[in-house]
Image (cartoon, one colour):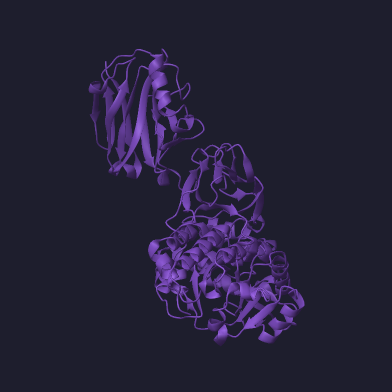
Length: 637
């Protein structure tokens, strides 16, 4: 009597085909059954083995050995355990689904006289905690239906609204980002080399919650662990997934700041974030980790003593002072104007705010904050250029100056400069560029600082041992030809309202999408190909989240209540942080492409990589590009 197992494609996957070819088998010691296997293929594939049932411990041991006894890669249809003591037989082969092929193993056994089980294993399969469902290549969700049928569905269909997208980076061989959602398998991302020497590749994945709403909560941990021993956790943060409401509770975006840890005496840092956002974006989590970047410029100049400012690629902070919101009673009327521009979403947010006015600051945080770390910690993660927009309310004195994003006040200008001064006093080989510009300031209600007022702030808040200099826009190109080591007496360089820069930003491309980076990649490619002798090349890696909302009216309309709820009540609902890992994985990867590296080498000026929520991964990419520029033939000034 033949023994049959069925693999059936469900949902949209049923349009694909599934096939199987046997490569090895085990019936009993030294006996194979390859010639006794019959396969019927299509959207449902039936595999029949023409043997009877004869329990054999050696067959079970053979099956178990194929996956090194790791239950993470196995599942079964009935009850018992993922590794039975005995099997009737076992098969090895290749299953092909939708054009993708995977090495797999099957086994059939009888844990009792009343029950037959089929067992399935593959190194490309990750089981959920009950070993009775899981994911093949993160593309197909597999679950049993009865004792001899495995059903496959596209993971994206099964897990709509229940997916956390993962983005990871590690530039250190001994540590790895790890994401652990209770009920799913943990996902670890070890170092993989990118095409650009000296920097690792960006890694992405997904973790899923597909098993209903009981229990009501699942723990979600974001960790950095030892690459060889996941039980050695260097840093961990935990959020709780509310499976009824779909919310992620834990550290707010404001609290998801740079973390420090030590491995064998080496200072390490972790940039990270967890975001709760509705479709089409979906929940996001990222972990980027590497060595502390406090002294990277000093290390560069030790290796290349003649490096000039125009040879550098600097990690740069977009809207650098927007790591906090300084609430003012006049702000609600300004917010009303912004909400009008958001259409139905803005109207619903306004309705919720009438009932919950104490959440006004939360809305402004989710719409306006672009950084999480203060200036000192941004510098620790490697940032060496700041985009700062200082202004004060027109009816007040300039001493009350903040970074202004549209109408939202961020950090105080004096505090920002004090943080920079403190960092540079501790790290003598580092230089910082601060660009002062009025872009994005609501000039109807706020007054942009004059150059004389900026000088006044610098005199009062930058230590004399650190020093600062103001570079006129017209002299900045010549200034860049100086060696970095010749600038250590005045290490804060102010550039006031620079003009004629080679900047990749344009509103159309950077507001094109919340989820598709292709438009941003297009404008980046055009910009880096321009190698004229410009004062400054700025490669803007972020999207403009608030503006991009208007290009997703239909998708947001389908989930309007969820979007409004996240903006008003959720402290992990910042739109820009939610889109950051989507764009990072694309733009950082683009930076390592040989064509991009070639164009960066040909630049004749300082290059800046500008981003929201600056992080150590961006710094590592910038540093690797600095080394690539130094390795290239010297360019004429």
